Amino acid sequence: MRPETGILYRLVELILGSEQTDRLFHVLVIQGNLSSDPGPQISRAILAQALNMLLFEDLLKRVPSAAQYVQRCFDQKRTVMHDHGAVRTIALEGMGSLPAGQNAITRVLRPLGYELNGVYPLERLRMTGRSYAQKDYPEDIAQFFISELHPERFSPAFQAAVARVTATSVDRLTPEAVALLQQLETKGSLSLEEAQKLLPVLVSVFDRQHAEPALSDYQTLLAESPEMAWISTEGNAFNHATDRVPDVDALSDELKTLHQPIKDTVEKSQSGRVRQTAFHAARVQRNFRTVDGTMITREVPGSFYEFITRLPMPTKNGKSPLDLSFDSSNAQAIFKMTSNTKS
Image (tube, rainbow, N blue to C red; front, side, top):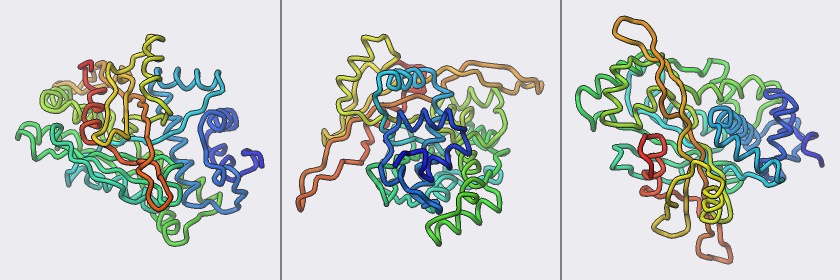
């Protein structure tokens, strides 16, 4: 069965159009059952795959080095296995109408079949990371790595700046979207028409939900936490998307010879089964409010693109599942990609 006859293709095409959809289906690895399902219903797994495809496409528009890498893969007829996307949140009540911390994201992921897969203290960053895997296709549909920043672990001036920056946050989930998510969670599927209505709203959840920050607040945040400064300009957008590759060390060497903006070192987990590296973050222009209320533009770090190699777990009962875990040390090193410090 050709992918374009499947319900996943039809759903993505309704949002992106045929040209971008064709391109994604050629370059991304998509599990066969997901691409060939004729419908007419959209399962939670298919909707999860569609959401990841749209967020992946959005990141390519914002990160030139990622777009160039994926274009090279496309030209060379190589594929990309989207392993996970990362989202940063703030564990704080009272951010306008936005739920606190990871709940802003997990309320969307649960109906899509995602479940908690690991908790990772990020003590140096005063954050906590959690991974969520799609239970129907845990190795085939991208995970989400959601981090929460804990403002109470920082200075009073920092906390006040966080409160000011996030006070204007809005909740993108409409009552109709909430009802459709509840229906999906109960029944496990939606019609194509319902999924077409819901999907753009879900994409909008992965964006900045507050107004432009004051430059003085941004500077206060940056002094104590580059991660919170990043959230102040980028919000809940994909911090990075990730290509799962057979040999990240070899790829890193290849990208260095091509003079790509790749991290100097490859991070290795304590188990040795997970190895990661990344491009440095894109530089983006963002607006800030000044004391007199006018806007000023500054260049700041945006999102980036990551590479990961995952080896199988030790064989047990004749099975060797892929190691889908993360590593706190690896994660904290990768987070530096959005700072101004080269590593």
